[in-house]
Image (cartoon, rainbow, N blue to C red; front, side):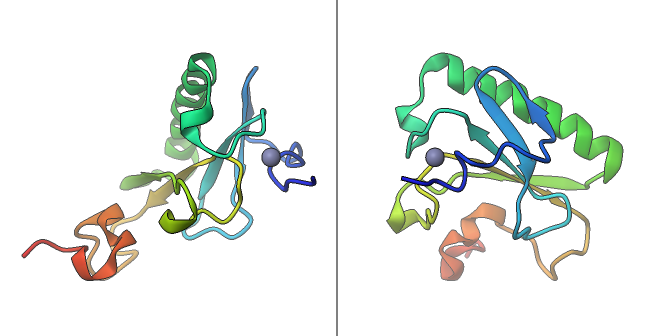
Length: 122
Ligand SMILES: [Zn+2]
């Protein structure tokens, strides 16, 4: 079965033994990066410990790259695990979404926005 993330091995920002990182084709912000395990698994929870460590190593490398290039004021990290949580590509991946002050009117709550009516606090 063809998997878009199994085939994403070009224009890489970062690579180590277990993961690759590249810019999202449909970025929600400038510099939106995906960190993707090389092995095809659907969920983060299917990954081996060394693959989870490789994601963390990639995350720190990507953070340094974003700091050097975009100087973000903040970052959202996110994984959509399962269809109910919004996962559209059935290959585990971590979203790294750099944020700039003022990129939305009110950033309060951040990833809480996955359930829009509960994003902000009472
Ligand atoms: Zn895949």
